[in-house]
Image (cartoon, rainbow, N blue to C red; front, side, top):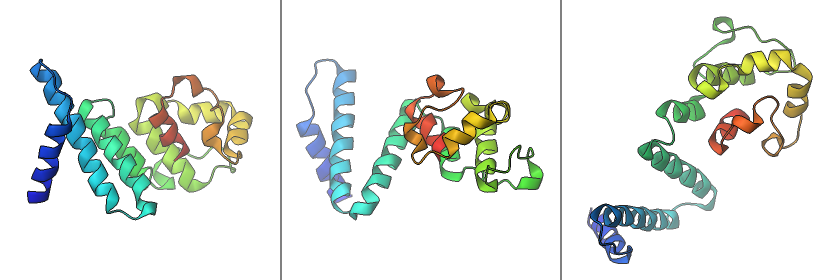
Length: 158
């Protein structure tokens, strides 16, 4: 608690001054968040830093309402709670079972992907081509590419 209070005070001192109270509070929150992020980042192994950044960014986005709790849960769990006998049948053999369960969970939990299984079934060749790419995260996603934000792309690639 002592160390946090020192970091918090440091955040207050370093934050931008504003006449408007709401802007001042937001500046303090932003600066304190960054100061804590820097402090914690120093104590992490290099291979854990990217995960920490992702989790912290997701938490910030959930607090601001930009990211839903359901979308975050889908990122963490995917289709781990499903099994092949309880969900819609896999339309093509080229789709691994685990990937299909993740796609079904994604379609059930995130509105943007509601029709994803149907898109894959109707446009088999384009989706298979996307799936076979060495880095699909950098490739145009069939049927829905223009409707996805960065987090939704992450969910699909996951």
